[in-house]
Length: 291
Ligand SMILES: [Zn+2]
Image (cartoon, rainbow, N blue to C red; front, top):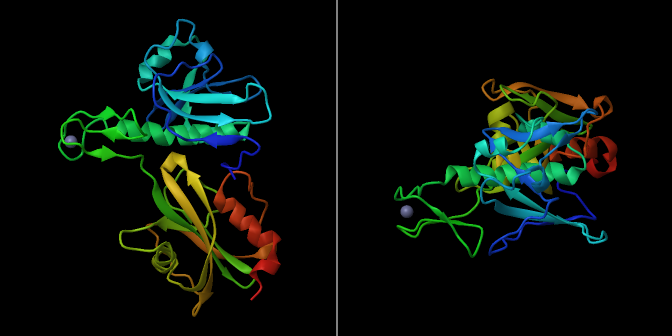
């Protein structure tokens, strides 16, 4: 999955003090749901590096995180955020704001993961310029990754929203869906956000009932995945259907949902999303799902 970047290691720890980016460090500039990037002749997408700003960085960069390759000399790459979209003007020609979904295609995969996680932090900084409790202008903590209100003392940590991905199975069949009104048009599994006062297992049962009108049993945890472009922490669960198999579709949420036989599942790219990995796990390891 996208976060599996071994042998490289993601270092998300907050590093206090002044930072002095190296020329090869990566600089993110976002604007809405777009990211500043350059498309090379072969279609490859790259982010700007510090060295691309010929006159130096036009604003004080915000340190985000680092990715290290323990085996490589100089294998330490830092990632910075420029808050102002107008900072893009300090670059030469050829740079443009592209949809953040383009980041899924970036190779190597560690840069794709960094871009999505950088976007999550960008959204958090952007959305907490003012204190939600008293309305005063906020400042960045110099001790931890937090935004502080100097007026009332409110401390705001990065937003991480738990949500579930649901592999609902019935013998040799798995329930596949397509979501209404979303950018992603491919096959999906049922999914939904955890609500207040609810365990993740209760979310699984509720979402299945709400979206397709089915009852589940044998709910079991599989894996989790950070999904920065939506500020999500996705929790993958498999479960079995019990009782009636007939789907009653919630048409506000889903465009379609159907039972798909294991042998009819196409090849999904399981290198990025938890959803695709869970679909392929069901397809390729029937012994794990035999009752
Ligand atoms: Zn406040």
